Length: 483
Length: 91
Image (cartoon, each protein chain N blue to C red):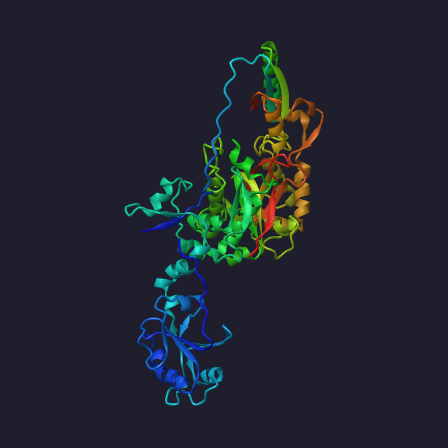
């Protein structure tokens, strides 16, 4: 583990950072001597050659410690330091700026008035990762695992039982530190307590698993919000993990973050091809696997599982929707980025290529939704209906609000107990016999969620059946995505 | 040389030894835990009858919902009152 890195302080007076390899630095070498001759207290840090520049006090910064800690991106950089704190900075060579900063007139009068600088070695792409690890790696608390020289990095993840069956990106310190730049939260902040082992999950552990899943740093806030939502009593990821039913955590993203990180809301929205969606959903499941300790065949007892248990994360097409987004339906203000977690199975398609009247289309939805898990089971399961744009158009043209659509579906799913009870229609499965004379709704109030997404062609919508609904099972859970 | 960061909880799993199996249930208190799945009670009713025949005392417990782990209070009550526990999964 690297030694704790402390930001080195700068001496008072003028501080310049240069490298010999930079023509602008070579150009201003006489200017530095001129400043010294003018009696200014000047310290020059050199990144590549301690004999450069000549005639001034040079400090060797070939380790780039000062350059890195003081965020030098360009050489030359000239700073003015008072009582140990930087008060002013200029980069490159600009005579007016240098004269203003130093208070010395007539600097480099034979030189061009200005020249841009060069890239600092501390931000050289070949060195940047190693420098981040060297100077800030100590803030990471996780155990370091040194691979043997003949060990393949990708294979090592499989051998240690850390992956979901697909290859993962090896979580090196450099990659994890870069991932952590995606959030303002501290690496040691606890995000949630993850079942089944009830482990306090830190931002750092989420970042490590996000690296393995293939996330970019800007996805991390979404992953953090998803982990937070999954580990609530309300969502009950323990039960979702442990159940024999084929469900997993489905992550629906709303708000500006969808576009900011390039999520797909259109063609093939629930399919392959979009890195953000696929890796965010995967990162959540890797956190549950690796930190929570929930693995298939152990606490995860699914009879069949579902491909969505690898990753199931998508974003709503809010811009093209005739309705308010899911996040607003869930009580959040429009413009706030959220994740909504839903315990759900795979998708099934509702084909309706003939309905042009909303009454006909909601009837198609209703008969299809009745089959969620079993046509004779009512009230036990929530569902998501992902309404495709061509279906949504029918409702837009008719002026039907989301609330209206939900009411109309509900009205068509008031099921007579005589059709539902065990034994009815020659099927032993069904509702208990005491419901014989009742009328039961297929879904509990609020148990059906409408989301607008998909490609612009195709008169299709998609049903995603839920798991045991309500406080005794899993409830849709929405959390704000925070930076 | 590659150094990776451990993605797991780094937890050492606590190992607990099982209580020794009683040679007889006679005079023992046996907890019957219904996890609240359909027809779990049918199974446990029959077990309770068999236990009475064996001279054991049966105490009934139920989880509030089968979808979540048993609450801590319930686990402690079972541990405090019972010598043996039988848990009914069902469907």
